[in-house]
Amino acid sequence: MSTRDTIHSLSLDGLTQHCAEESDHFFHRRDNDPRYCFELFRRAVVEHNQRAWTFLCENYRPLVSGWVRRNRAFAAAGEEIDYFVNGAFAKMWSAMSAEKFDSFPDLKSLLRYLQLCVGSVVTDYARSTEYYEMLEDLPPGVEEATDVQVEDVALERTQRNVFWQAVGQRLNDDKERMVLHYSYVVGFKPSQIYEEKQDLFEDVREIYRIKENVLARLRRDSELQELLMPNV
Image (cartoon, rainbow, N blue to C red; front, side, top):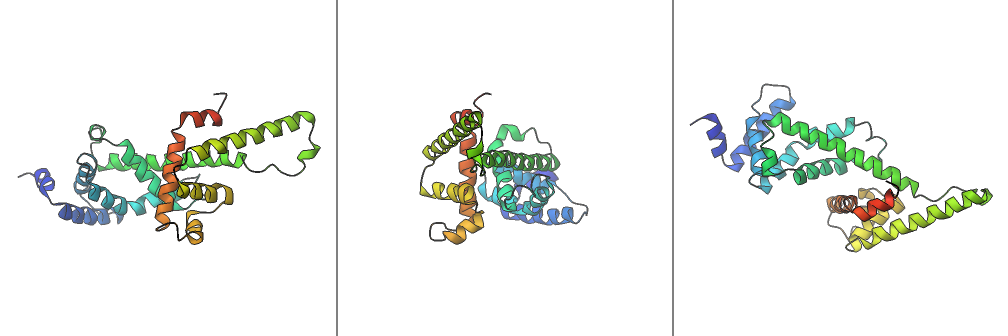
């Protein structure tokens, strides 16, 4: 039996043990065999093995966290590392398919794709944050503006109200409304939301999941995108 066949025949527990050992070698810059972790990715994506994917997320969390920290947009994002780490894994999971997996020849190519997902989620967040900052209250002194400026102010207020009304119509329940309100109106981080509303959420990870799911859904909404960029 070839080494490849031996790896394919390993139990999930045996495979995760080998992957963990080889990853430790990799992180300490020692010789390692990447085929065990590659096989775990294959089982996760092609065979839809959720246990394999859960292990991979935990195994590569330190690596992905490092990529997030080194991203130039992270420092200004005002968000916690776990938000982007979870978002990167979620993006990779949603984009992967059995057919697409065939285009990745080895572990190195998979990790490179995961690194690209990190850059994508951080950049997307930075862009969304820039827009939300445009929706903040206007600075004092507006009453001294010219007639044309006053019209512009009125238009901006109207667009802001329309935008938030549209967002509100797309939220599914009180938890989503609570997370969005505290995140973008109050300015709380997920950990602060959990401290404030522990009776509503199981843990801070639930808040992360809700926030990620809502933002992903809003980004896919074509009508909402038209409100964001009406002239595009």
